[in-house]
Image (tube, rainbow, N blue to C red; front, side, top):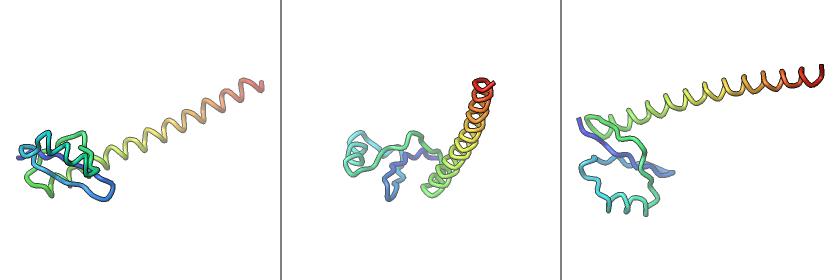
Length: 88
């Protein structure tokens, strides 16, 4: 398996084999408006790397969505308890 580095831009992304990424290449990509994704993906090919990245991102977004819902429910409960405390 190869390790791939992902560079992301608003309108696209690039998947590059980690062995071919040099500091000058990273600098060039930043000048073109890309940013390096914080994780490296281990995959057989570029297409599989993109698929794995999308799966990881989807899992992260689902976790964040669940956490946000839990925080919202807790916040509502705290507000209701505060209102009951102040008005009683």
